[in-house]
Image 1 (tube, helix red, strand yellow):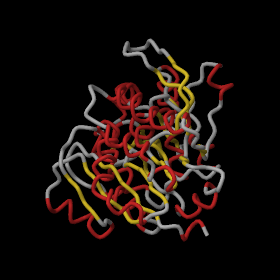
Image 2: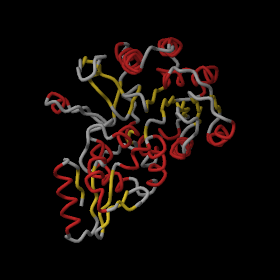
Image 3: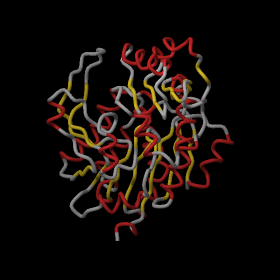
Image 4: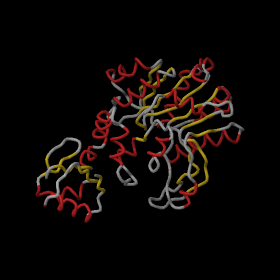
Length: 335
């Protein structure tokens, strides 16, 4: 029954090179299977890029506005405001994730319930409100993370929601966007009696033990096993927590779309191409372009790389030397 509900999605896009990447097209293809899609880019996209998304969208807006994803959500909403009552559910989503890893219809089967008014795939109870680097100031602020949100009709047809959307404006920085809009939206709805739900649950015990938890970084493999259909681009692009074996898990999860994702990572962060190596048969390779690294640059390579993958490497002088350097420079080793 829930899959028969008429849905409309506002998809927020941004790309520093003003292009629509293939991983975005993959997302739109999957999204179109369950909803009408309004594509809003915070970029002045050339016509060739706009043409890429037209087969998957009922509306396309592509103009630089500088209001981040919530600005795109606002512009998309204003575009369909006069016909939004024709729909049963409103989806707000953006391109900050890779996926979906599984059909979105499966997500609806897990999440749709008469007992909730809005839902997402990830929740958070805290937000670092500090503007001083390395000086966290966490405030208690439960919210659903805004890269994927679903609202039922009783919310998006309310005056409360409309006023909130219309109030979105350009802010001074990302922290203001999170505080005023991502946190602000969830808090406003909850205080007015609307009921939230999240696919994944925030682990309060881990947080109090100094573990910064969330879909952004730490429990991503566990979340995928629970049915999370997305992984944050930031996690694979930056690996901010230096998670052990992240690329090994990445390979297992992303077999089908591996090349597409690697191509995007290498474009948006060229140094990513130098972050891992493969040691095999006495030679060291870059995992992405397989260029041979000569024996004389072991030290140089170990300093630059994030980790080392070993495939059927025989024990040899070169192998021992590489392992010694990995230990010395504290690099991740995955066999």
